[in-house]
Image 1 (tube, rainbow, N blue to C red):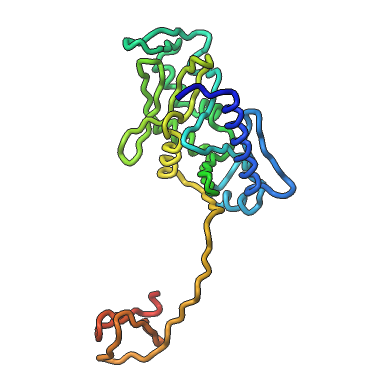
Image 2: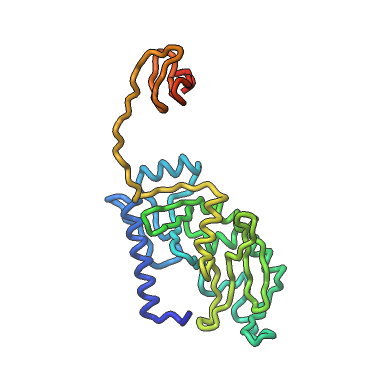
Length: 272
């Protein structure tokens, strides 16, 4: 994949802002339009009282209703200096045995693993809100408690250092180890990037969280179909009674369903 142009980067940024505005239209209210387009604080804030109430019922105590909003196939957590894992001014750039760019970190891999298993590290670089929300771009929003997400990553991820100096985080999905999280040096930007990026790693992380954590889901695209009420007839059952398969009626005590000609099933109404 080629380097993204400044125009493409600007378009991507504006699309992200559009997603945040859409989110706010659904989860905000007329008097509050809390949307962040710049700094490292939360992307959005849920001010709609109905959703606040349902989130409290689902997750219990919440510090606040700030939200980190994710979408698409790839998720970037942070681009820039990540001094805890690798002081940028102290790296060495060499080559691998296959002549690929290799980054040598000042910290040992064991030291880096301890940091990657630390809650405060992830709270700094991922915990941009009390809730993590995935937008499927089809008007469905899935919320996870951010503390649950961070605890899951710190306790379940298996870390590996590969020859290029990248650090890969593997998580289990349906019994198989999958590469999900990456920490790597971007030579073109002279910065580090941390995230579930490359391929469909972001969506894969969402699927893993969805399988393992409690979530609150809202689908604004669901269609409610008006159903015509169905009324069962009341009748009298007698031994040897014949009817078509599927004939159903009830009396004061039982529901009767014809299984085959003269064969019936009786179900006590009190058991329904």
